[in-house]
Image 1 (cartoon, rainbow, N blue to C red):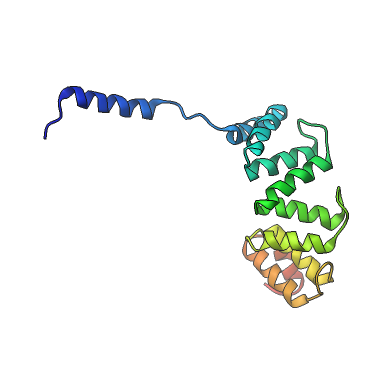
Image 2: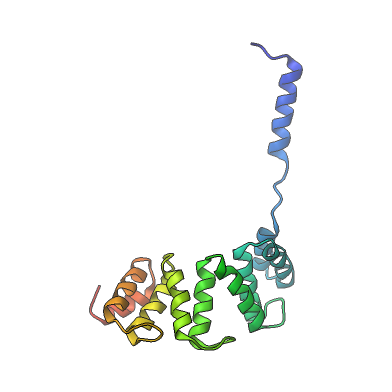
Length: 176
């Protein structure tokens, strides 16, 4: 069946309009672009929009900005709030950051047990830094029962994912 020229023209025009319209980024992408340009105040505003929409990565990035005082007044409390929101959505980076804060007691009551729980959640998602940190907790029996065997398992996993600290520690133990 031959399509009338008018229909062909409409189809081509429609296709061209879809392909030629610029793609507008959302607040998450705009936030990343502003952050990379070191326009931290704008990045905070974009990340807040995306965080309010429930984007875990935006919540995490906003947490980092509060933690470092980039574009906002430094606030451990706001950073931790954002990390909690993202960690509750199972974002491994947020679980790792929050676990580390519990491990050292910055902005939260120090709890090696809570740190181990959060680090384990991130480690189970193949987060190499969390695996290395969790290995340390097992090695010294902090927040978890001491087990050098379990520590070694986590070290090996972290090393296999490219964690240089884990590789160095394994080498120190004579394991490569």
